[in-house]
Amino acid sequence: MSDLKIISDKNKKSLKIKSLIIKLIKKKTLSVNKLIIVIGGDGFMLETLKKNKGLNNFFYGINSGNYGFLMNKFSSKNILKNLKNAKVVSISPLEMIVKNNKNQIKKSLAINEVSILRQSRQTASMSIKHGFKYIIKNLVSDGVLVSTPAGSTAYNLSVHGPILDLNSKKLSIAPISPFRPRTWRGKIVKDKLKIVIQNLDIVKRPISAVADNLEFRNAKTITVSTNENIKFNLLYDKSSSLQKKIKVEQLRKETF
Figure 1: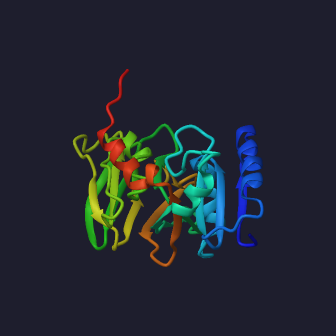
Figure 2 (figure 1 turned 90 degrees about the vertical axis):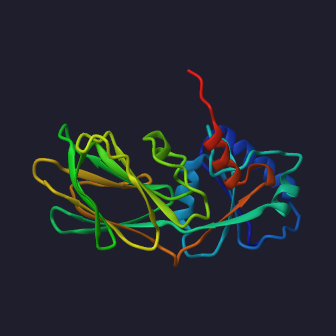
Figure 3 (figure 1 turned 30 degrees about the horizontal axis):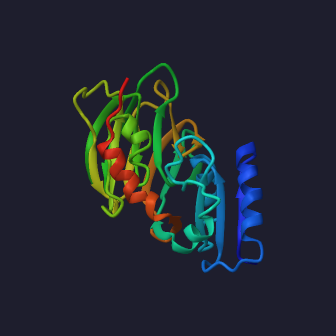
């Protein structure tokens, strides 16, 4: 039990679930070493993953928020069984390196996406390279997203980006409200090469760079790459695997 941690956000529902789990697994031996049970929503899971990077932990998320794409449903009857039979999904994050208008360097990891967003009433003007090749030399838009497969059903999907298979080794580059060229819908690229986004007008058209939920303002150059040296081991019940959730989103039909 010394390798087990149970953490939650401060939501009343989360704290109640945490208390129940402590009682249920007291004096029980779990088969998973270095296990962290995370109770909350996707945002809390993202924070927890980043705080524990490089420690080779296993993370079992329990949803107490809204959708909880990265989480499992809580079942007081089956929690021990679910922990025992959970399947591991290992994902590597994006690494974002930002050089701002004062040539300061800022870094952060992103598990879902890197968002480049206009910082004022002016649209952003950017060039985008993949490796040494330009994908687009001047994109005028509200911004652009670089999304992982795990994050492709989040913000990326809301801006009509493609849903990526978890094992695709691809990234989605999707514009946000493109103005010029108006018909550009983005591109799917291999995750092995760096993506470099350059602000073409840092004075008139400032932009910010956001790694999941951490923002750096007045960005001049943003470099995005997959960090294969970091692996996050997420545990999922058979009934709610990450791959299944991605397929559900692909087939989802919404009503208004």
